[in-house]
Image (cartoon, rainbow, N blue to C red; front, side):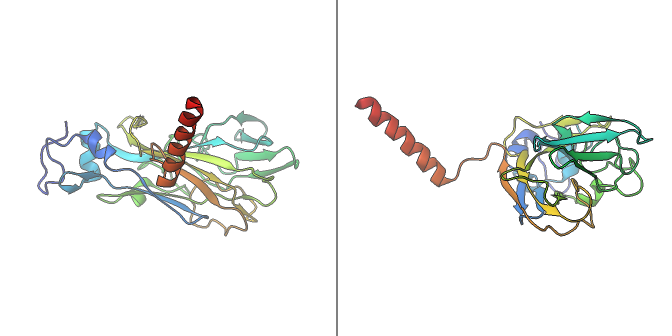
Amino acid sequence: MGISESGSGRLRVEDDPYEILKNSPIRIENNNSNIYAYFEPMGSLGPVALSDLAEALDVDHFNWVQHVTLQPDDWTLVRLNEERTDGVVVEVPWVDPDMHVANIDQMVMVNEELEESEPFVPMIADNHIFYFDDPGQAEGVTAGRIEDFTSEHVMSFEDAPRFPVGWFLSEEYVQFETKLVGVREDKSAKYFDDIPGMSFTWKCDLTSDGGSIWTAYYSDVPDALSGSIFDVQLSGAVPEPSALALLGLGGLLVLVRRKR
């Protein structure tokens, strides 16, 4: 039920770490071409150090896990072997960035409608499910290292997907699901799916002429030419008051019809 009080009093013995999670939903910012998220745990005495909360939850640290949960029907993701002589289809939902790529240009998205294919941005990622590379897991160009996105009290997330111009038909998009997770020492993930505010979904139809598909944060991502990031939904979020009013009105209409 928490850990011993630290010198700064950030986390008290009586603080339930799961209550801290419930009281610290992910904060999301969306400027339509880039999406950002922040996890900043708050306890009864104020901000809680991420390391303190991780210890109380029996994990080593925190990270994010992201999946692509929906893509256009005519898109097929293929993971090539190292010789580029054969490949396997990667079914939705798939991990973003892919955790099985040891070399650049091994991931290719095929658009069957246009009979075109585009490589993913050259990237070497570690062999774990996590969005940001864990300490000491990868060398070279990566989607980012988790230590670069973590301070004492805040862990951040950012993404800037881009897809080839002309690939989206009307009302097509790619849907993502992003989750906060704890990382155990054996690199397994501890999920908090039963706690509202610990994950979010979002859609994207952004395009660019960068010549590749960009599905993870990267410092040199090209400018977007069209599309946006939209329909961002935090898990367990309460509907806006206007939506609640409409729901209430709908219930009232049902009652009126029944009385008739």
